[in-house]
Image 1 (cartoon, chains in turn red, yellow):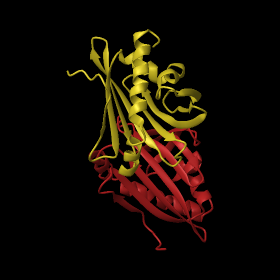
Image 2 (tube, chains in turn orange, yellow):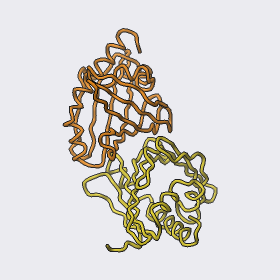
Image 3 (cartoon, one colour):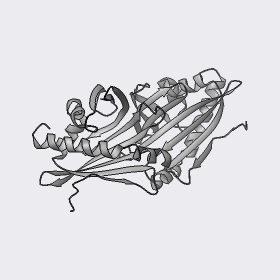
Image 4 (cartoon, helix red, strand yellow):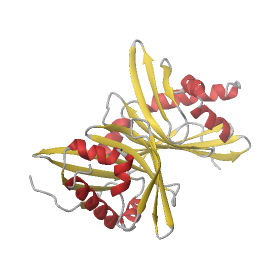
Length: 160
Length: 160
């Protein structure tokens, strides 16, 4: 199987969906923990220079979450609920509070590639192509790649 | 404004979405109550001849829900989380446990038409056209119309 070393980010031509794929030197269990343990998640999510404060975190079926990201005195808050948390998949909702009517349905899959590697696939579904394209143009690619690079360092040094 | 007396159900040609619209002789507050009070909701949701048992219900931002519908000894279970519950809108996730990997993001809007009438708009968003079309072909139209007819009777007799 072809090894994906950078995050592949693509917009589906037929669906209001963004898909991301990235391979990690990690087990599925480690990736699940990195996405469900609030102390770990706060250390890697988002771009460099942004700090994340978890306000609420209950990563289980029917739980919910909220965090505030801060850079140079400006805060950006996000919240949602966890529809499902299981070993191979997380399904959750996502709202950036700067756009309080916007809601995405996000799904993460952890696919065991063997040999201590796991493919993370992520999908973000919204109800309009305009909303989807605005997300793509918001600079999310930088945040995604810098965030996953932090996660890779935490996996390499044993933090996760 | 044209009065909608039956439920208009439509599939969006460009998006994997089902939309429903129906006008009620009710205030927005009454429709919100009918959708958030578990004892009321269990009385009207679903087709005639089906009984609904609420297993879990926490209708607030970040809460969750589960119910079991039963007819002639066969049970159908559903669950999800409430992303947002506010006076003019409910956003929630929805899974039929017979198809446990399927997840819909549902939005309900309560639009005050004045004169004691409210337009209910509902949208169900999934991540494939095939999944959307399967929902439409599952007989949902009967359940939706019979359920809303029960709700109208409960509004007329003062139950809600």
